[in-house]
Picture 1 (tube, rainbow, N blue to C red):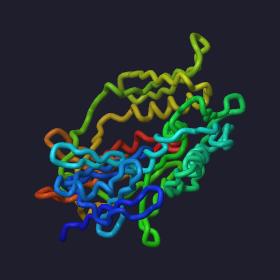
Picture 2 (picture 1 turned 30 degrees about the horizontal axis):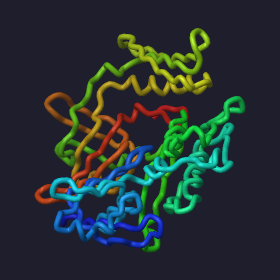
Picture 3 (picture 1 turned 90 degrees about the horizontal axis):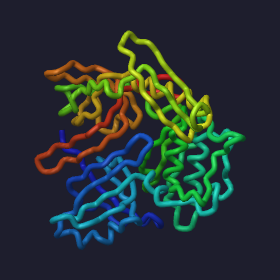
Amino acid sequence: MASPSYRYITTNAVSGAVLAWDLPLTGVEFGPSLSASGSFTGAVAPRLAHMVRSQLDPGNTKIYAERDGQLMWGGIVWRADPEGQELRVEASGWGSYPYRRYDLHGQLAGRGPYVNADPCRVLRDVWAYCQEQPDGDLGVSVDQAASRAKIGTPADPYRIDWWDTRALGEVIDDVASTEGGPEWTEETAWKSGSPADRIRVGWPRLGRRRDDLLFETGMNIIRAVPVEYDADTSAQVVIALGAGEGRNRRRAVNAVRNGRLRLESLLELPAEKAVDRLTERARTERVSRQVIGEVTEIIVMDHPAARFGAWAIGDDVRVRVHDQWTEYDAWSRIIGWQIRPPHGEEPEQAVIQLRRADRFTYGGGTA
């Protein structure tokens, strides 16, 4: 099978004008994450560095990775620095941009404060505010998803005050971490000959269970992190402590019996005033902490059992790892991946970050 063809394209972040159709990069690695910004790294040889400086203006350049004509990743160049004999390039996905922006007007220019609001709406409002300011329009679209989660109450509205000086990326993190709230990731695809940049939002989850994909040692897994059996983080009882002091402090306990030695864990949420949300956080934490035995990362090659580009952030996939210590077979959720294009003698590979699927709860239910 022929090696895939890669191309790296850069454009001006404000005008969209193409700066380079085929940037000469080597040692590239890129990929997205679950509810976090993805990353891109690469290098330019010293003999070419002076040619590409104008095509890599940090903080003002979008960069895209294309594989066999399909856009696989897009983001913003934040660094292009000499390092030894190379010019190192570092970029992050669209979700990194709100970390460089602040609310100068308060309440996102009157969109808040929020009472019993859908976190999906707040997430969209943050992006709308970012992109309506002069020279702030990245051209990123945000999905019109909706959830049943709520943020803010009549007694304690969710506020974004200008004097709090929170980066807007922190606001997105905050609302996305609402119990039972949405998940998001970054995507880019060709549309009418131009890159279309998107924040994909999902509720009750991103991704789906993929019966059509399989990752297995000896088939497409090149290497896997050893299975971790760690009881330090295990618990059947979670005590969640919220706002308040002394005997007036909010508290919620979630516990089950499963025939194992009782282990307890403390979850401190000093800003949480609502007991119902505290109770739900305790349950979610307990579900996650009951899992023992996990493969957190695998390195795979392109294979008919799971072609590159076939899986998506949030998907549940079957992972089977066979080694001298264990036979591991579990549904695992993809929370991040990075593709390493072929380079020298190194073949094309993908590094996939995983968490056991049964660690997750969605919209108030388990996986």
